[in-house]
Length: 430
Image (cartoon, rainbow, N blue to C red; front, side, top):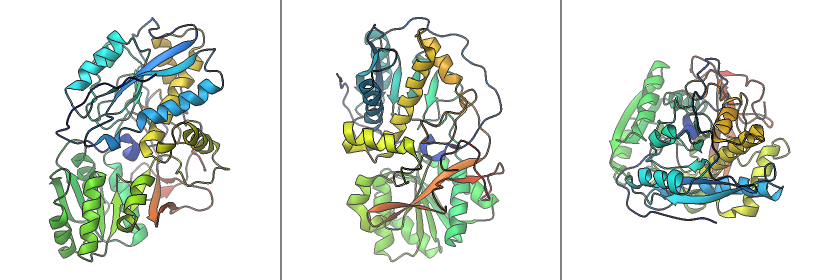
């Protein structure tokens, strides 16, 4: 059963996440300290079930950025439960609590989830308002979507793909795209908030270092970006031929309309919008737009990627509305990590045992969907190679670019310059 709590309005926005900027194919080498404390009880656990919950944004102006997280989690839980659960226990998403776009609700809902609902773990946390304080104080196993940059250091917080956001990596990915497309002048657009501006600011630094001309920047576009037409005119005057956008879908679509209206000849790289439902609606505006991903893309041949085949089959069965949603696959990854840790904990099913088990996974790939994550270290750091997937909108489809055969990831060396290197063992498709 699912309970939905909370309604409200959102005054701000957060859009950049580990899903785009993390080192998805990295391995790590610098050790961090494991949990030194932790819950020794097992709230929410019965002889036949494990009850977990999530606090996420399911309604409000930017719910589209977060609402698919819990369905992705639930689809994997349903798949596991259909096969008998874990050690005879079914895993239930018993409490799905909704901030409703209200930042003041997050803390109170967290207290509800832990103190009143007695959830064993938080799996599928996805909101712009995440604060780690109470999850850390209570040593609650917590898995979710990092858009705030506050998931680092704490050994009980597991952001999908790794808990560190590498803002500068966007510069490397953009520089490589410029090289591949022949772009010579880059323009960067972002909102003046913590979830948007840092990525484009970091990209500008790396682009300049790597010899790419940054001809125009506006890192304070008013949310939601419906005034970006003036930016497009100025970028056209400055000769920009690659626009990198750290805005939301709304801002990107407005920008794309202006690009078309003014006849601007430019490539575009968006951090948001690579979802089939968005492409179906705006295909004429999005044709040719590039995106970056850190998981095996949905269009990859499933015979080479059984993890993708399982994801697509289960999502089509249990959550068909969200099957091609980028946030849903993050939820799926979070659920896989949690379930794997529950399995590893065995008969010693406590919160601390699950945290410890998660942190012992040194090559987690979410069943072959992402490059290996070393959770002994991924709370604080990672080492190269840094890998991403380039996809491009073509008609009403997304196609993978800059790879051959069934390879999908493009990997870069430790200098983060746009020089490709071979993927390490364990990277799907390598």
